[in-house]
Image (cartoon, rainbow, N blue to C red; front, side, top):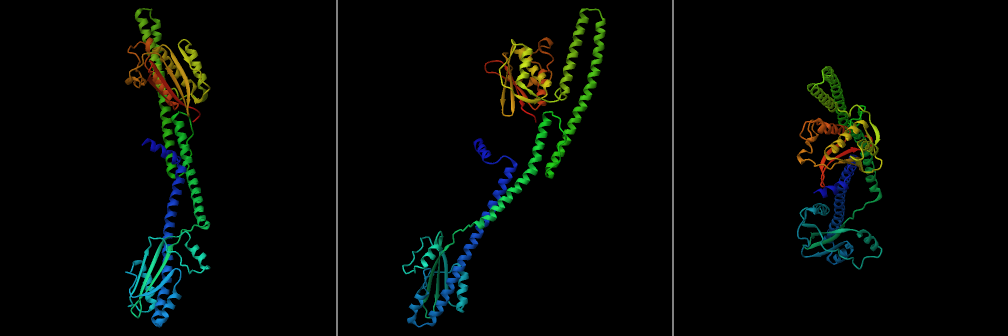
Length: 467
């Protein structure tokens, strides 16, 4: 199923403009083909009717001549009436067994010429399943090329048989054969089809530009919004449905921006209100004599201060305030690894790879991931690779890894990689949550996986280039 779907995707255009063009051209081909079939059928019926009426007129006139001519002149009349395509004969029995529906027009024509509606006349039109009868030897040389030209390329021979009762009681039997005319397509007939195809292509191109252009702008705007890049409201262009969608997107962007700004202002006030009592508590503790209790209280205040700062940093969404810039990820990772120290972190050499990011925020996220690798795995091995449209950063350690059911849970706020609540061993449990918040705000993703050889690896994927 997947293989068939892949083949269909490769053969069928994926862009809306090309799909529209293909469907319009396909519809044009189908309608023109059906019209050509109907026209050909009508043409064949008209040709058969004309040939049948011509043979009917000749047969009726020959019957009138035979009725009024002496018996010794009959052979001369029959020889004179014969032609390569129409054969006349007189016999005691009719050679036409019955009348066929297609011969109704022929019967009416014969009776009208004879002027005797009661005279018995039979007419039958039927297709021949055998090859056409060869030309008679007596055909004049002048008529042979004309007949061969008429027969060239023609198929499906038909035979018309007529039997007319003569006044003497015997029957005039007439046989004529004709072929279905071949399909004739001239350049003049193809020119309108070509002009229609060009017109359809132009209409499809113009329609696609009106529809696809605004949709691409909308997709780029959605991508920029997902990466947290500031952007002006999108212009309202294209069909009404696309304009309505763009309006809804602009409204959503305004609501999100207003929500983030309101949250930022609220958190700024909350930060001030929380820091003030903590600062007052710290000052009062500093004024106390240094005892075991005062030292413990001071440690608790410090821990509370750290937790407040970390919580506010996570909730504020640190990736929102910093402007974006084009940064070489290889150089950024080199600086981070150098800060940690060569004995605890190493960087696999890689070429320059530019990405449009918020440098300080991403620096904080990657530092959290490297610090976690060093804290729980002893060392951090950092590598940078490039995939189509994406930069992939891996940070591997040599620790014990994590149970599979915890690989996603550790990204939740206040979830720690180890069970103790000591800040010396594990912080407050917001490092990975902050890292994911920053990376996702820049259009990327981060996940953890256990290595087959042992250890845990963080995989960061970031879009490369400006949105």
